[in-house]
Image (tube, rainbow over all chains, first blue to last red):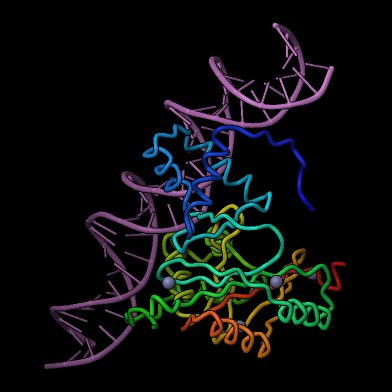
Length: 131
Length: 131
DNA sequence: ACCGAAGGTGAGAACGATTGTCAATCTCAT
DNA sequence: ATGAGATTGACAATCGTTCTCACCTTCGGT
Ligand SMILES: [Zn+2]
Ligand SMILES: [Zn+2]
Ligand SMILES: [Zn+2]
Ligand SMILES: [Zn+2]
């Protein structure tokens, strides 16, 4: 279910974008990343930033989210299934592994006759430092 | 934390929108709802549909979601905290109450020093009829 | 029932994030 | 080095959503 395995070539732009994304903690919009690249002297087209981020998202190298006003924001993310506990103030993020939840979802799904069930779970709170 | 308790007046339009939303099972976009109202002879402005749906969402009378291409879609939803198990084919939805998960999230959050933790959890699978 | 204040409505303009276009450029296997 | 095919970028085009603003409704007080 890895979509179209279109060949994906490494380029200067992709590297720069991935680097900036990895360097920052929280979620970033395509435009914010583009601005950062600009000010750091790296010339990359806005459309390219959009395309690269989309590619990273579908390849599992980044998480996507929509802000309440509909803007897509991205965050570097390790591959594999896991969840996040995010601070609503400073954006600090903890990756969580929840076997208990995985078990629970499987059970509940089965009880209702559903199969091939995927799930999304995200925790948003205030971290100790931002209390 | 119930936002601005602005007085909210009942109107013909709001009633119509709420009714159509409640009548349909899955998620609907503002434009789809508007189209339905049009064809059923109920004259309502598109902007009004957007505003009404937003209001319902903030009042907890509807769930909002963003499709992959960023469009906001709404679904009538009972108030109070709960989760959903949705069929990716036909849209059939089961509301789920998961005390086990609630407990788990609280525990994990505490372990990492987070407080006031909210969470979102959604299950998407294929129901028995659509297998 | 009558009135004024404040919320609500709607048509259309304005916005703004995202995507499409397409010629120039780059990567890679041969 | 070379050709095929992927990538890029400046800019136009989309399109969902919000803004404007004059007009309509609801509602509490009289
Ligand atoms: Zn924090
Ligand atoms: Zn999980
Ligand atoms: Zn189904
Ligand atoms: Zn819950």
